[in-house]
Amino acid sequence: MSGLIPYLLFPGNAAEALRHYRSVFGGELQLLDYATAGRRDGPGDAVAHGQLSGPVELAGADAGADDDAVQMSGMFLSLLGTADALTLTGWYDKLAADGRVIDALQKRPWGDFDGTLVDRYGIRWLIGFQPED
Image (tube, rainbow, N blue to C red; front, side, top):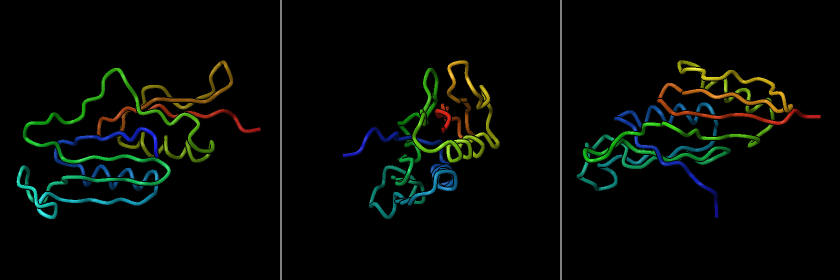
């Protein structure tokens, strides 16, 4: 049994976004379009389901006609302490590229490091770690 896996609905660019997340986090990506899935409730070449499996797990699809694309307000996807400091710093930098830094990744008064950003797809991230001995 795994933990919570965010499922994001994108405004027609799910394949691009999920491929980007694979380039950031690594892992394996599976994409299934509507035609292959035998579904007729969306364009045949749109993503009906995508799944990134690896160190960070995400799922997503292109938003259907009756769905709203993801809009993040009042929350972040948190990657606090989910990998070593070097890996988390790399993820932060890659997600920040073409995105918007809200609060730079930095050492906090209590000794931990964290930072927040909105990536190029409008997804908000909180990334941080405790310093290694």
